[in-house]
Image (cartoon, rainbow, N blue to C red; front, side, top):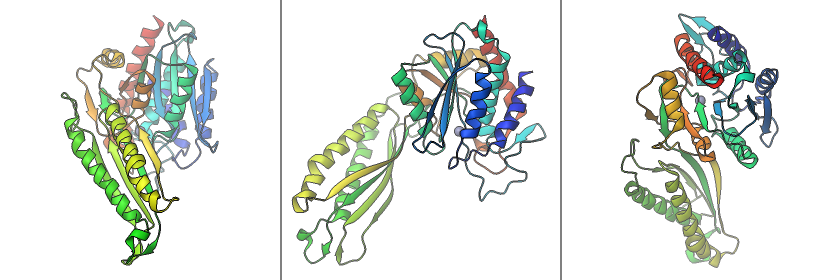
Length: 385
Ligand SMILES: [Zn+2]
């Protein structure tokens, strides 16, 4: 019963063209309306433009804790992909449901909503929460906004299940993904008088040197039992743009770089070390020649990692619900790390395979959706008995 309802809801969800660049307000109001019809308490948060929204909804008793089911509503673009069928019209074929977002990750959202609609919310012994977000694919911006809001309100679910496609396997860890562009502004001048200018390219090069030094240090900071490959936090310099001519002192330089931390303490260490290096080293030197010289940083993404924990109530619960033994880690980032930072025990487990996501002819196997529905049905039984 839940499976059929899930498929029906999924067809509706696929029809909303929620590519990350576009508004997701329609799908959010669809989800909110259906949850409100069940008596859910809903909190909406929006981005600065007002065109993207999250909804956090709760059913059952209005008490602390509870279980959270989480999914992002945005999908990756279909432009330049060669689809056999209309990506925004769910199509069933050979036991598979095709459409953009079937696997990543509207299938899980549909199953979560179907659970809510089949449960008797009055019998819930603890709250059941739903977190549906925007802009996951562009850096988990929606979830960050939602988690900040929940933190201010003091709402901290005990357990979060993030239904990214893992083929219903338990994923208890992933690295974080922090992306920055560091911008250097110096003072232009003739190359024959280097001391009269402030060469942004040279200061940026020293900054890159510091990044490479940190990259080496991070190898020695890896936790002894780190399950990741490689086991340490990595740093990559992705681009370095600067200069106009051989004989001109470069007045501007941009360095685009990222780190993938295995633990939050590494990210803090890198940020603090770089901040000290800039404020006590590079910047005073630049400003001694030209007071308006500057070093600024754009944050493209700061997606927290999901750190494997010795005690993880989410892992224990979902292992019991699915019968899965063993857990793993993945190389892609999810919203789970943000919920972990909120103080919630988090696990990633959802229908479909990441290898079917982001491609033309994205699909989810109906069997996978069925497994997900069974897991959620068992969760519903547990929460109402
Ligand atoms: Zn996803």
